[in-house]
Amino acid sequence: MNERKVGIVGCGFVGAASAFALMQSGLFSEMVLLDSDRDKAEGEAMDIAHGIPFARPMRIYAGGYDDIADAAIVVITAGAAQKPGETRLDLVAKNVGIFKQIIPEIAKRNFEGILLIVANPVDILTYAALKLSGLPENRVFGSGTVLDTARLKMELAAHLGVDARSIHSFIIGEHGDSEIVAWSSANVSGVELHDFCEMRGHYDHAGAMNKIADDVRNSAYRIIEKKRATYYGIAMSVRRICEAIIRDEKSILPVSNLMKGAYGITDITLSMPAIVGKTGVETQVPINLSKKEMEALLQSAATLKETAKSVGL
Image 1 (cartoon, rainbow, N blue to C red):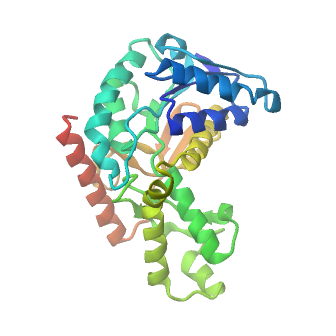
Image 2: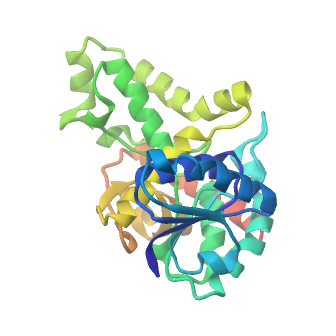
């Protein structure tokens, strides 16, 4: 396995933006782009490669499945795009079909790296990739609610007038309509969220929390309505996850990973904070949840299980 090599399957908006972000990151010295439209992959590789003189030496090219067999990470962004008015779960049947073509091709080449699933609906597709690949569960996980959590931090940062990096909070469950803001465990540099809000002159906690949660949940829909796709935010999320893996940072990120009994949830992938390093997901990190949050998480898991069952997973 080449620890300095990354493969990206799917060269649409998300795949191309992720490739561009990873080129700038300096994490890899080789990048392979795959797409069902070979010309698209070649064009993106050429275009992104022209920025290398302003970054770090790197080989970027279009290739096939043999070319990514030894990659440390393969990022899967391939899939039908989400259309205006369409939920992430509406995409599921189309994209599971696409994964049934892609994942076995990677697995049969004795792939030893990490599969990072980014295509939507990411939780169902991560579960599909896990089943279709036969790879160890620590090496197959999704971008999950890493982006949703970043959106939450941005909203809270604006509300509180504080650096987003000082906010510690998670969105858990499905990356989608049933996602849950884990308000019970949110804090600002160790200060309980409600206390920090009052310190900054905010007292309508319930109203503010509901508005922020709604804004985060609907932000992707608003972006799609205005520009037909979202890709920069998720590209930076892909870069962040790859950074945690390649540098073995053991960062705690809310990636979509297999549930094995925590909170009473089994045999489905959804987002829970987990330690991410060079072997992938090392372990989940339990967080405090209120009874209401717990009920919402169980409902989110039930929704995902029902969807997985509906497409034969």
